[in-house]
Amino acid sequence: MQIYLDNAATTKMSAAAIEAMLPYMDTVYGNPSSLHSAGQVAAEALTDARQRIAACIGASPKEITFTSGGSESDNQAILSAARLGERRGKKHIISTAFEHHAVLHTLAKLEKEGFEITLLDVHENGIVLSQQVAEAIRDDTCLVTVMYANNEIGTIQPIKEIGAVCREKGILFHTDAVQAAGHLHIDVQEQNIDLLSLSAHKFHGPKGIGVLYARKGIPLTNVIEGGAQERGKRAGTENIPAIMGMAAALEEACTHIDANAKKLTVLRDKLIEGLSQISHSVLNGDAKQRLPGNVNFCFEGIEGESLLLLLDDKGICASSGSACTSGSLDPSHVLLAIGRVHDIAHGSLRLSLSEETTNEEIEYTIKAVAEVVEYLRSMSPIWRDLISGKKEFVIK
Ligand SMILES: *Cc1c(COP(=O)(O)O)cnc(C)c1O
Image: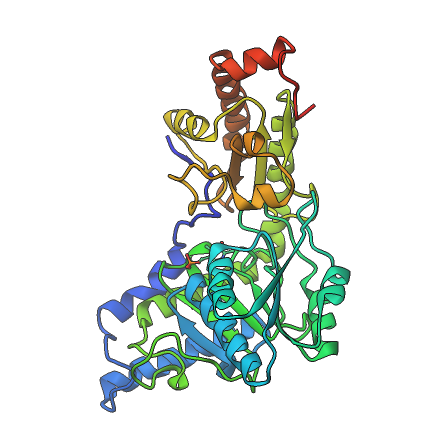
């Protein structure tokens, strides 16, 4: 038995996505840049996929660039806006302290080049306010980049309001919507979005393929130089099978978005309720304004890595928060950003659900986590100090 509760790290491909890919690995294998008929069939498929993906987010096909995934889209979106700003003498960028590393590391690179970066506070509930963005905007601000939903604690940001603030001031707004896509509605027009990143493997599509949406008129800076694919903005032969799989996965997710959200929210809240019964535990991030499938807890007196290994023994695939920090001893920058102290941030557990998650799996998981936490605490010298009163509890 395996219970997969790490869908924020990656998802299983849907049957529809696999089926959509197969012909393009077998019979329709031409290069869309080739003039012969085999190439032209592939080119038609590419046009079709671009149209369907654009329709899912309220964009027009020309505004869609295919990339290798969320990281590349984030890099290209931010670098493009920075180069555009630079040319106008604007070198200030606003973001938040708990963005994905694809955003934060790109911003750090720009900072070394002389850009000034303001990282907004996300408060204990893990939500930034559009008012904070408005207050941080300066005459030399060229970009605001705020994620739609956080990948560790699932909190949803008021991107439409942030977009409106940026639109009013004529500043570009990018959102990393990698965790949101397929779970929350996206409409780039209505939500005032100029640049947006997507990644197929987070919504049951294949790995290594993503989208950068850039509103008409925004010139992109190349991250990969070479051929003239993607209107000259992203070189490299298009990954047609993956693009077809991504289009099918996104359409399927968007068709069932409300029904899936409703179902997942029930399971999520049951899991939150169950894990809240464990003493000295705390939910990370706002209880309501979060992704329908995201649960993230800290347990006092626990070391996250041991928790994960013991849960794996019980057949549960979970995460301590971010795949990027695993293997390092640094606590999650997201949990530090919402004010968790180091000791507490180390005892974190992220459980991310999928449409296939069952009620039985949730019940089993609640019991398993409670047992493992109790077991680990029974062996922990820190826990002994806490219950004997030698040390004070941080989580009441
Ligand atoms: C997974 C993820 C990324 C990176 O996407 P890849 O396709 O794996 O490069 C970026 N941002 C967020 C919020 C993510 O969850």
